[in-house]
Picture (cartoon, rainbow, N blue to C red):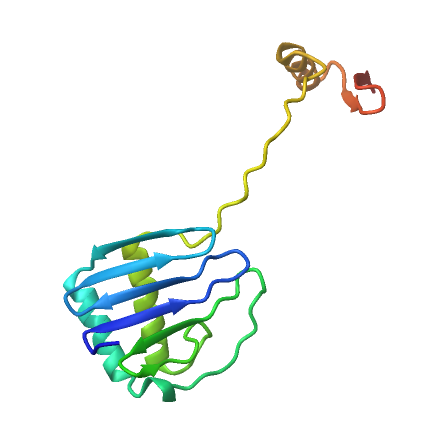
Length: 167
């Protein structure tokens, strides 16, 4: 990776898609989201955000020697996020750290994600749903509910006979 680029890689999880973000010194950021999300695009970040990000990357050098404290993550949302610059790569920056360099990189990363505005959440699989005929019309149900709230009678649904039964 040239010194004019920094690459942010997130490996995804059970509920989130993996993605890469290529941030260039000219403020152009290109993203590719894989797996079920399948999206890509690019935007120009504001210069302040880009300068702040690259400044924090350079202050954190050497990246491969940043402290890493493992953290427990839920399997459904636990992700690993790393930043590569030149020939170096950070440890996972998504684990909380007391080192301000790691914290600043994580803050920069979340700021860039928000600026790009893409979704990382997997879309649910859409399955065909069979139409089910309701045993009563909507107006019948509305009348029963209205009576219930007026305090006149209480009703409950009886699944065994598919009828409203008076309590």
